Every structure is written in C-alpha cells, then in structure tokens.
Length: 386
Image 1 (spheres, rainbow, N blue to C red):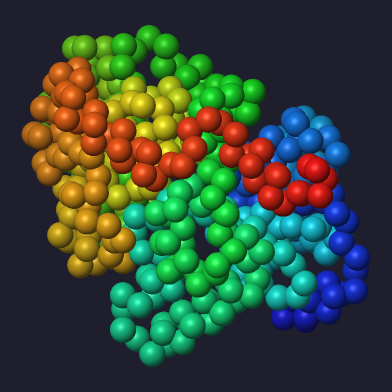
Image 2: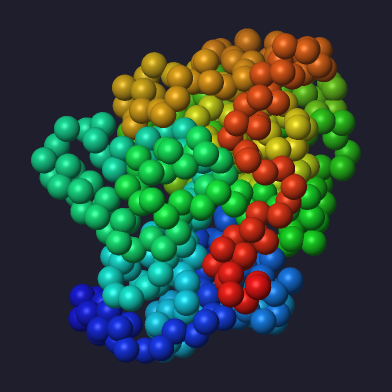
C-alpha cells in the first residue's frame, strides 16, 4: 500500500501545478515541533503574510496546539496533507522527507530544502556510511548521495567551513550560507513559543547549567556520572545553582543516579533545545552540535568528553580534531567537571580563553544578527522579495 501510494503521489507531482507562495515544513520525522523548520515557519507566519507556510505533523498534540493558535497545520496522512505536499513550492526539512510526508524516500517533483539537524561535528550522510566498510552500506551510501544531489533544492549552512562539510556529506553543491533560522530566537523573544524559565521554575536559582549530550549509536548503557555526582549535587544545592539534563531525542540508555536534588532530567518537558538555551548560564556537552549554536550567546561551554576514545571506536568519527578545534575547557572526569564549574567565574574571563572562544564562534557562524530566516526567505522567494 505504501509503495502504491508513493507511486501515485510521485506520478501526480509532475502534473499538479505548484503554488508559488506555498511552503510545507516539518521536523523529527513529523513527531516534534522544533529545529530550523519550526523557527522558519514561525518567522514566515509573523513577518510574511503573503506566504502560506503550513506545518506538517503526525503528532496529534502538536496538531491541536497549532490549530488552537490559528496557525496552518496538516496531517501528512490525509487528503489535505497529500494535496499540500503536491502543491507546495518547497518542502523544508531537517532530516528526511519523513519530516513532512509519510516516507523517507524522496520521489517525484518535490523541491526539498535541507536545513540540517545541526552543524556536523560527527560524520553524517555519506561520510558516516564510509566509516563502516560494508558492501550493503556502501551501496546505500551511493544511493543516498545520488538522491541528495538530485532532490535537495538547497542545503542551508551557517558558514563556509560548514559548507565544505555538507558538500562532503551530501554531495550537493546547492549550499546557501544564511545561518540557521532557529538561532534567530536568541535575538527575538517573539519567535519563542515556550517560556521554559517559568514552566521549569528556574527563577529562584542563581545559575542555570545544562548538560546536553549527543546520542551514542552503539551504547547499551550510557553513564556520564557515577556516585561522585553527589558531590556536584551538594555544591549546586549550597550555591543555589541547578543542573538540567536534556537528553537527545533518540537517547534511551543514559542513566542518572537517583536521589539528586539539584540535578534534574527535563528531557520529557523540553522538545526544542534552542528555546531553552537563552536561559542557560553554562552549557555542558560532549559531541553534540548544540555548542555551535550556543556560542552565539557569548556564554561559556564546558566540554565533557569522558568517553572520547571509546566513542570514536564505537560511533561515526568526527570532521575536526576535537581538542584542537574546540576552545575548551575540557573535563575528562567528574572531578574535573566539578572543578571547572566551581571556577567558572575565573576561567571564562581569561583573555586567552576569550580569544579562542570568539575565534571559534566567528569561524562557524558567518552571522550573529538574528536575521537568518530573512536571508533564507530572500533566497527561496527572491522574485517576491524584489
């Protein structure tokens, strides 16, 4: 049935006329309301009334959430959803066509705008497949590279450095450096849907720290902390700080010890990390791409690669030399992490650190102005802009 439906839609896509001002957007396989597509969707509905921007989701809660706010939304597996997909001039995604439709296969006359899940630190796309020498995966990688060349109308980038990485991963030369729309909300509160500081009751804390690790592909169990974390918990309590833990949407194996008072897992309460980041004083992460965005705030990042060697062996490899490219500081153990948190007011003011930090932020972010959605709009609808 799925194959037949795909064939029918693919056939009609060559005959159904496109509507020049219609655009459909979605993210995370149609399950969540987040990422670059969400930010661009929000900006278009606020600033470009001449553009019909429609969100596609298979999540009934998100569907009702947007419908109650009078914002355009469809279900992908519906007649209206199929019609919007066929008529849309662009389909804006962050992963695959499943973000806006019913399948990961990209077929027919559809112009996809790939906005990316994040700036690649880990190998992605064709580069990730090449890490594992397997005939089946190599063949799959070639197919992936072929359809990305043919079907991505544009690939969104934040910098020239990232563009080189995306070219290697996707083999698609239609790369545009506009910045990520999701980072516009660092500069404009009107683009935010949720007040996480209020909903998470964070006002009473002097400092808010966030641990946002990446997903580990081949780990049966993820243990960034041992019983030593109770020393950190006591320090946070005594100083009226809090450490929030936001797991990757795919992460199921990360384990936290019980009985902690000032270390809280908020993974189930926060879908869009970028809406939380403006409220964070210190970001703690490992190999997640979140720090590429967070440095636009000018706030400090602590890198916690406690399993660096094991991660490289089990997972996909990296595009950059982790300890040379990133500005630091690095904590390889819980004791080092606690020390860096205690001394954060000192090292974050160090002139050498600030120099590295600013150079890194500028290298991976061509823009720091909150106008990425506008730049993307100008590319996609250049004739309307003129």
